[in-house]
Length: 403
Image 1 (tube, rainbow, N blue to C red):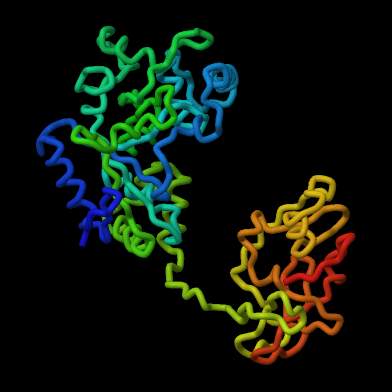
Image 2 (cartoon, rainbow, N blue to C red):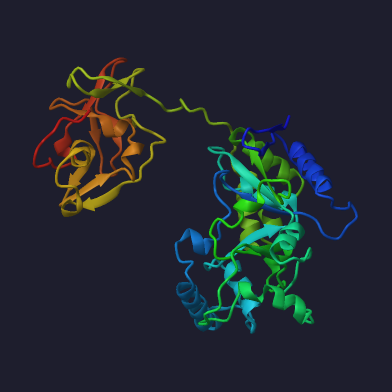
């Protein structure tokens, strides 16, 4: 069953539940069942992501930088485009930039709730909660430009008085005109097949990065968030496939077909978190003040000890490290040291048992060239697993016990 969260978003646990929520919201917002217009939808892989366009996310939303990006795209695109002709007006060029992943102030929306849901769950392995946002673009525009309609600024024959209403959101490059504060909703010209197949529509951000925040609450709210828990993501994805919503639908080309086939034939069996686990962390007998890694079942010789482990390592030059203090001790205690560089997890908050192995000159485990640890011999249940650091790492100038 769906429920209203304390933070005023809705949580759904099935495709049917999702469709009921979107239908009820549509009715509550006053859209007619046979009306041409309707709410817009945006799927996001993680529920906590804000409604921020790409140019804000990469920190380049100041006008001069945006104008440089637009200029460079316009200069370089003709030689790289597969289209016979490129757009000649600013709006269509801006839509094309967004379509090909260039940073803009545009946010993608769709008129289809199931397409938005597919984007929300498509690349989520079920490790986190996803979200679908619903937007009433007509109410948004009524509040921002005092017109309860959505304009297609680059459409042939568009009313000049209408396009003038939103021209301030995309001023000509290298002008000093200020951009309005809040986002506005626009329809794109279908300059690419994917825009049409995804039933795309856009909002254009204004100068405020959190411009949508004022529209998500209060009596005149025109935004609603629908949360999809991680434990139903896979089921949602399979249900969407049954109804013909897959990568071929969203990306109608050979690349989309290839991805759809991978998804359809991929083994989606449930993986248990204890699969391939041989160890756990306990207080160490070797280092009284630290911890060690202990076998929780018998481990045969040559067994890889840490399957499914995060293998990302970032290498930092020694002269870039903190000189002294607790942060330097983290590097000295846990890093792999090689040729003047320290190899560490991408964050020390991601230390796994492999980084906590203690040293012994009579080890029962070894490390190979890929930094995978294997049992040198049969390891008994309850035995602490140890390695010889010198076989894969240099020592810090001031040696400190790991653990």
